[in-house]
Length: 250
Image (cartoon, one colour):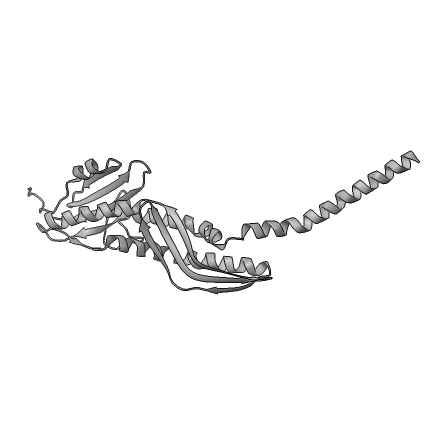
């Protein structure tokens, strides 16, 4: 009788273990899926941020342009002229008078395909979980802010299952000081447009975190390289201003 009682206890324990295993098998995937998609903004942040980081770095290394058109080739890279003249003796003309806004537009255009792909994926993800999904896609913008690049997507997502939830104004934030570097670049090109040159030592005295290099080229062009000493973020751009003909000097 004692042995039979022990066998019965073992059978009951085994049944409980099997029942728990079945519950975990069927319930846990649902819990996991719900957890990974409870916040649609987190999904969009993770989906788009890498493209913003990569594209903004590329744009910063190419004078603010994703696909430079009027450029100087330096170290096998195309670097956009943001102040340029093809004449001798004359100061350059600013090519992008509103440099910050120009860079914001370049970043915005560069992530257009990834933005569509990420929101398509988000929509399908929720449909696969049995949600009724309404996604109203409107406009989006990119803004350079101190130490940040903020992308705001004025989209409206409504998810309906047992209840209805609405999400608006998705935001993706990326750490980057392109705001500060582009502001200094803008100041430099204003000096180039007015005087034909810029005194870079003053900037580095005023901004200890900043390193500026000015590389003179054989054709009279200048390559400016602005580097954040702390983060190593860079902004490179080309200038051609007050160029002397070959054989002449200042």
